[in-house]
Image 1 (cartoon, rainbow, N blue to C red):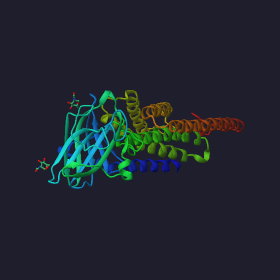
Image 2 (image 1 turned 30 degrees about the vertical axis):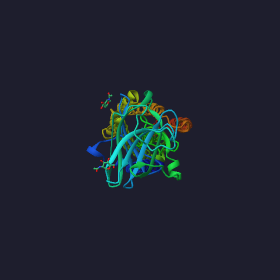
Image 3 (image 1 turned 60 degrees about the vertical axis):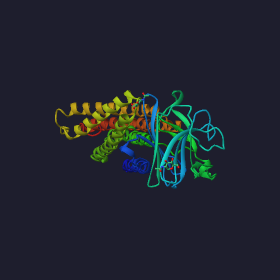
Length: 384
Ligand SMILES: *[C@@H]1O[C@H](CO)[C@@H](O)[C@H](O)[C@H]1NC(C)=O
Ligand SMILES: *[C@@H]1O[C@H](CO)[C@@H](O)[C@H](O)[C@H]1NC(C)=O
């Protein structure tokens, strides 16, 4: 029952993650441009979409929805500070005649009228469009000083006589600051609820930690420790098969999200984590099919099949746990997640040790009784 609840939980989490990301990810762009990462910024109906290139450039699209006909929209990095002063801004200015002008401006004072000027970093291309009230600034920027994480700020304001004028001072206009990291896709502190890539990484982490990292070992324990109880025969087999199959299904989903993440990431590879993942998928698949090919219990080859099945099974569990830790190192979430996983493993370990002792106790006792009654082995409870 617990396994199935976990399964439902996983599916729910992955769907929620998908739904959340949708408003950001379904946006369409000029020339069908595709941006691998997007962040819905927390205020002012704004979204940032981008592709990070290994040469340190970023192709980005800043999208503001619900724009008035005559308005300016700006998105900026603040390399040396934060907030408005020092902002290196990309501006889109919608004129009353409907044409949209795009340019850069370096903000040096609060009285700025956002006149075009050079930025502290290169902006090889910048254009903008306004379609159905959605303004998009398209630009390529050369990330300054080799960094990938910066303070960002974005803003929307009125245009008077063709000149940008001071923006409103509502809570949203003051809260439009935060941080963005162009590699991890992570944003923070008033900078949005985490990028789409971050959500995908978290989904991948949850799916795999729960399936390979927890359900698999629990299913193996069910097989090993329920088997000894006569009353649990053949229920243990169905519990084991159900656990491992659901773990496998969720695990394959998690594995696929990992492949997608790997394919999308530019310049960063996690070879060991990826290779172990591929080995795990292969061994896991082998186990599922081995189930269908197992000889009958009294077949003379069954013993070899058992050795094979147990060997691969323990290898899968060991590799799974190693890979969950590798994944946790890559994902680098708050420490408590790693501690939680370690805690659960220790808990399972303690339960396993107790059940192991109980199993041997029952088996030895049964052997003794069998000897006394000269009844011989009854076929149950060999703890192998
Ligand atoms: C950087 O890489 C992108 C994508 O590969 C490419 O389009 C662009 O021309 C490169 N820019 C420079 C300055 O090398
Ligand atoms: C629209 O107005 C702006 C500013 O007055 C001007 O620079 C631009 O050329 C105009 N565009 C068209 C298509 O009339």
